Length: 327
Image (tube, rainbow, N blue to C red; front, side, top):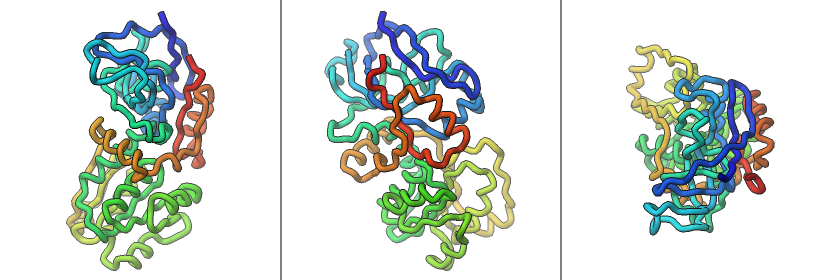
């Protein structure tokens, strides 16, 4: 029986590499050898800190991986072939691990659903395409027109992706954050205007661009206290998209909110169709995520990478694990 290596969270705030026996592939499964796996700093850190109630320890995180097909189950013959590069977001693990909807940080994956990745597509960027797809799902919930003013709060990967996609839709994009390096990347690849909200008056800047306020605000920080400031930035009948994940309840003043008559949208997750579109946009360089990878690290450094994320290290934006030589 062949062996595989996985990143495992055995307990809250604990990260290990563990080796296990790969179960026998089923006729409807691919066996994929992983090349790169991208990290979601939101979902995976909530899981690591024990704040995702649907995940039980020990758990194998990760939901965006790129690899080469090593074998094709008979039911998938004709759809996939050995040697193809594919994207997958979950895998069947050994029975000693509890069931999970993630399970993609593994050296060898048993996969039922995968997307073929064009050879021209940068595989490192592609390993973050599920996060880009989260941004895409949110953008599709908004009605953005050419020339609209769109504010994106927070310039993590979801914020960067949202800014890039809103800009591609014809909007003038204002990106906000408190970390200068992230704003620097936003200026290069994602936004028209950047604002460090620790140092600058965002409301004044927005109304200097549009006196009545922004047409849309995309909130990606996950901070529940940002609802009211985002409403304040909007013009009357503007749109607010809550694109973050909010562990704390959101409370708001109804009177001041309803005077604006906003449309409020809440998005969550992505699907393979949206990821496939993001992979195509990456292929043609319409979506730039390779430039947002700050940490392309060997998988052996996973404990240190997660430690830095738990400590809210602002220097980590895009983190991708390199699985070469593992397993």
